[in-house]
Image (cartoon, rainbow, N blue to C red; front, side, top):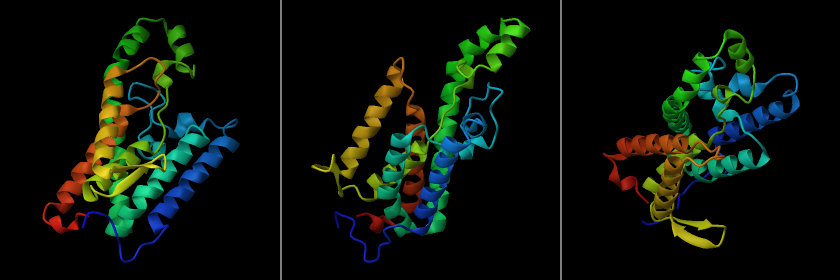
Length: 232
């Protein structure tokens, strides 16, 4: 077989449906209670060096999004690729996979961010106590920058899809057919080049995307190494 043709398929399986609902509720809360409670400070991911960092942010950042376009693109990709994976694996394994990819993405991003922020920390340590306190409450201070979105976990789903269904065609812009394996490789190459380029003004967490993709690939590789017939 060269394409995915399931005999039984749920358009909106249980975990995907609940993830869409939870992400939607978080986004609604961001827009409604945002003026009273800074949800980005509480639930988005912050570097270890920031006073705003909290352990639960490794999970909660996956349900936060910056704007309507951000959440729509992530949720559409989650539904498009994640639905197939959940139908294949079942809800329990898919949820384990999704959360693992999100955590892997966050860890990769945090490691890179730690080294990127070292010059900022060193400069911060040279300031007076009053200047430090002022900066710590400044939302534009680099140590207070927030990372949010489900992109890392979604990239894990994309990597798994490309591995399991390499010859299934994905239609770019709904018109250009491209096999999943080439789509994933090209997208990963683009993310890697952008991660190393580190252009000014680029606020996309490319290393998080790559971290999620790597975790997704490794999980699906080890889950399927004794069951090679599960390729399509």
